[in-house]
Structures are given as structure tokens and as C-alpha cells.
Length: 378
Ligand code: GLA
Image (cartoon, rainbow, N blue to C red; front, side, top):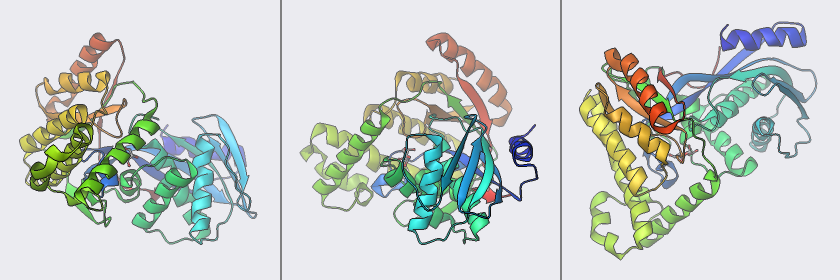
């Protein structure tokens, strides 16, 4: 049974009728442009065919009642009196109700069943998928206009102000605006998008190390402050405004740690723009090399990889048909992404799985991903 069928069937059992709407929102994998979004820079992610689904129908009152298949738990709250509690998945739903009302929207109540297959804590934006699916559910029952960038910004506010995570805009932008068969080059300063077709000569393989990040919030916020310190040193709004040449002229004046952090962001921005060009030109060798360089920079200068990520990336790169591989997402654990010749993808997955298991004792999850559409009503 597909996930869509599961949420529809469970809805029927629970509420005694068919849902009046079904919404979905994808996870994402970032091909390149890591830790650049909160520096007003560029990112190049795809939305993936791992998704969160909600089957729902409106209610007469202003109550929201949702059952989560993944947590085997239900949640019920009143739109007029929202307060924070630590129920994890439920907080994303309440946060979405809060932010939409803060933005001036009048919301109606609904009841629904939610289920998904975006792995949690793996760096594939399961939380942005829950946010955008929930926002689509509210928009559908309340008749709100759907503008992907505006909704992405509201989703980011849920993370920043309701959940207390100081994350950037990449995840919500790609989850809201993803295009089937395309990566999006997103300018995180003005939120303009360019859809770049994925070259036919490669498939995207996600390599989940099975390790999960710990203490990531404090390390993430620390990286942000170091980038902000570097931007202040250069007298600019964000590191996006410093190019590789200007950095080279003055980098020796910087504190060594801040210098390495800034060097990652500045070179990564440059690599991301180049990667979009390489993708358009179908130059997979160049694209793969840029991904490799991105990982090395995240490992050596930004220091957000871990042993498991470095191992799986090293093993992936050594396989025939692999153009390049790197960690993806915030880092400190979770997933890597590799670009592989389609005909060699099965052998690649089998071999990396075996060698990584043998090297680390962890069992990875390795799978080919398709580039999917952003959040939608189906
Ligand atoms: C997390 C954040 C994003 C981005 C990445 C790193 O996924 O949510 O905003 O900063 O880390 O590129």
C-alpha cells in the first residue's frame, strides 16, 4: 500500500468517511551549497520522493485533530489558544497554526491523518516536510492563497520562533518550491529561483550513515556566529558579499578559526554557482568534482562532518561510476549524497552498503532518489 493509501484508509477508519483533501510535502537533499543559506548565499537542492502525507477534512469548529501514523499518537488543539509543549511532532503543527495566524490569516479547524517516509534527523528535512504539509492543509481548508516563497518564510519562522532553531531558508524553500526532474539554484538573499534540469547521465543516491546528530543546535548556532563575525570583519551584511579574491587579500588578518569558517562559506558559494553551470552544461565530471571539494571544505574548514560521513564519502568516491560525493544537510551525522552513472547505480549501492557496514559496524540506508514537486494538494 502506498503512503497515500495508508493515510486515506486510516482516515476512513478513524473518521467514518473519506477525506475531502489529501496534501503532501517532500523531503529534500542538497546537492551543493552547504551552510551558505544563512550567509545570504546560494544552494542547489532537489525535493525528493520521500514525503509527508496528510488526508483531511474541514471541521465546523476551530479545533485541529491529527493522528500521526509514525508516532502512533493523536493530537488535538484549539486554534484560539495555542501554547507550546514538548510533544515533538505536534509542535510543528501548532507552530504552523501560530505562524499563519500571526501573518493575519483566519484559519478553520480540520481533522486528519498524517504519515511519512522522510527519515528523521537524517539531514533530509523531515521537519520542513511536516511544516509545509501542515501549511498546505490549513491553506486548503481555510482557502488561503498559496505562494511557495511566502509559505517557506513562514515555515522558517516556525523553526526559528516556535521550535527555537536558528536555521536558514533552504529547507522550506525547496520543500515548498521543488520541481520534478530539476534542482533549484536558490539565491537565499532575494529568494529568486532558477530550475536546473538534472542531467540524464547521472542519478542522485542518498547514503544514510545511520548516525544521528547530537548537540547539533549549539554547534550550528556557533557556526552562524563565526560567519557573522567574519562578515563584520569585512564590513558587509553577510559573507555572500565577499568573493574569493577579496577574501584572499585579507584572510591573514582573521582569527585562524574564523578564517577557516569564512573560507568554507565563500568558496562554497562560488562552487554552488559553478555547479549549476556544470549541471546546465551536462558536465558531470566537473559537477562531481565540485561536490568532492564541498565535502573536503566542510570536513576541514567548517568541521561539520563526522567519521561516518567521511567514511561513506570516501567509499562512495572509490566506486566505479561515481562522479562525486559529499555530506548533505547540517552535518554531524545523517546523510551523504552521491552522483552516479545510472547503469552502475545498483552495483554502487550494493558495494557501498557492504563496505561501509564492514568498516563501521553501522548499517546504512542507500537509495536512488527522484527529484519531486514541492508541497501540493493531490
Ligand atoms: C540545515 C538548516 C538549513 C541549512 C543547512 C546547512 O538543514 O535547516 O537552513 O543551513 O542545515 O546547509
